[in-house]
Image (cartoon, rainbow over all chains, first blue to last red):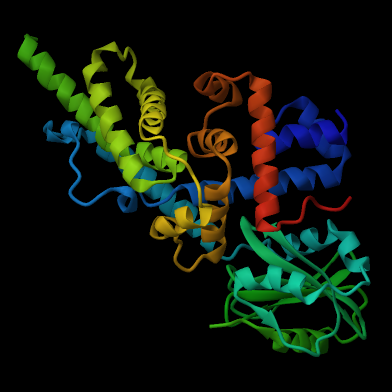
Amino acid sequence: MNCLEFRRRVGAEPSVSGDEIEAHRRECAACARHQDELRAMDTLIGRALAVDAARIRKSGAAVSPARITPRRPRWLALAASIVIGLSVGLALWISSPRPSLAREVIDHVAHEPAAMTATVPIASEALAGVLDPAGTRLRPGIGDVTYARRCIFEWRVVPHLVVRTPQGPVTVLLLRHRSVSGPVRLAEQGYVGVVLPAPRGSIAIVGRDLKDLDGIAQQVFEAVDWGN
Amino acid sequence: MNRDDRGTDSRRRFATLCETLRPDLLRFAFWLGRDRQLAEDVVQEALLRAWKSFDALAEEGKAKSWLLTIVRREFARSFERKRLEVADLDALVAAEADVLAAEDDAGLAEMREALFRLSDEYREPLVLQVMMGYTTQEIADQMGLQQGAVLTRLFRARARLRQELGIAAEPSS
């Protein structure tokens, strides 16, 4: 199986597995990452599809079978409890901080190396297209933004920017969904960075060979307008 | 068990099924038709039809699939009857804004809108796969398509969603 076949297959069915799939994942880190992203996107799609059924229902609508006296069997109550329990567990798992944040951030940055080498400033409209949906803006003066995309990170769509600073390119991830109680230091695979608590969630700032990480992080942090 | 008892037992079992599965049926119908009124009507009609042929359901473990098939057929009938045409997607989104809303999660609301804007041929198999957990072969059976055609539609559905949401096409290698 080559990369094209793999991507066609997982693009249609991200949860697919099997010997060929696993073998290719071991051979190609980029394809493995791609499948992981698609799986994360499917989680987001699943959450999006699960709209509140009560909002769909018309008020006072009555379907004939509802007139049949329902008597909920005990097994159903038990099954419902299990489902609710699993849902609560999943919700807590999704919303709670996980110890792998540093790894997730570094992995994400490491799998988009081209982002760090871009040198052409992004047009302001394109930048707005990435930041507006997140309700954020960048104040002027931070430096040229040379990369701006929306990425899947921890089952959410997040803005991913690269800013040219005097110390070199710096990756910025705006993680509105992820709260941290204090700065989280990152140092892996040659990258250094920090995740800082922000008015909305957190912000990850990552670079290579940064002499003054805290100074850069402070500048970037202050340049982000998180909106209301 | 006499005839009355059997009838009562059937009604109770059917009512239980309705109670358990109705939220999923409503969601399915909603994502099929993108119209809550239509979804409610379709599910109501589908459940009435299902009740009339409830005795034909051999295994209650297959009730969900059976009911989804009825909902889908009822939707097709209803769609034909009402000759609904989607002329303005923006208006459609606005009309269902409160169903699509996701408080405190703009990304989720945005994904819902992107799903809403997917054409029927891409949205339906995606709903069956992600929301209902169907295999691609089961989707092919439901939709009367070859499995290969389903795989193509699912691939394109995700590609369009990424495009609509402005998500990077794929990680750089």
